[in-house]
Image (cartoon, rainbow, N blue to C red; front, side, top):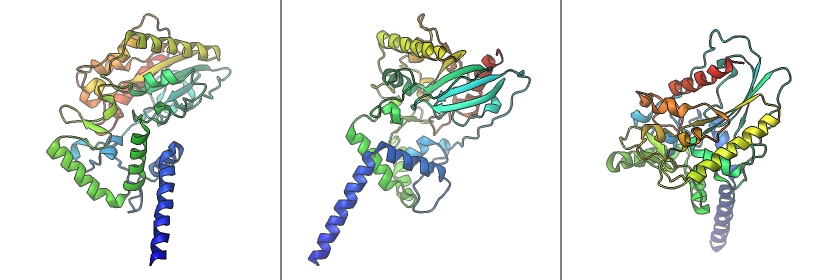
Length: 342
């Protein structure tokens, strides 16, 4: 019996250490995340939980709350009467533009994409009009511009922007989140997790995980985008010198890619949902950058269109950080208004 207890204790110790090592590896956790995204429709009891209703619904375990359940339902229609240009389009972007195909863009004969958190390996094509778009959501821009020289190299591995960590800075918070994900996100635990999340929502008026409710309770937001401090937040203090730094870095990046042979380059910052849906107290980061007299790079000014919308509720999905089909097409039309010129 004593021998059995010893073997059991050492087994638990070894397994525990292996789990800790796995949870401390950003590459391992993201490999698991990528794998379970590819198998998200598999509802077997031993599979890692993945909600089809949005990343925030998934984090908050609110699959039972109908008002937050909106599928992507994105449509990718070919535009009419766009001309016959020869544009080689390159998008260094994030999940907002990852799935948009070349067929929706006017005059575009080729489209290459890469993640904005990876090194840019694009090479301009001879005989084509080479246009580069650097797209990122608002919650990443301050950090990305601080840690990235010119996007020819990826951000440092310890940068939260490098892994899309959404403001999780401390090692303890990082480990706790990863351990919870690796140990407790299996489908057989879903009923318990959802019951707890619904209790917190309906009786205490709060979200779960890294989510919070909008003030009207109609949307889920990333906690880090509404925090009082931090580079991810729409409401944290941003000094004029910080804005000037961002502008100078954008100009530097613009000069870098123009020197590499790109005919034109655009920046596109997608506003945090909280910026548009809950604007009171907004730090004004996007318009302050875009209106700077020093800025020489062209921008797709989605902020002005979204913030002046008479019906902002249709621009974002209620349980996801991403835009709706309607919001996405505003951006596509904005891009096409420039592509038709080439």
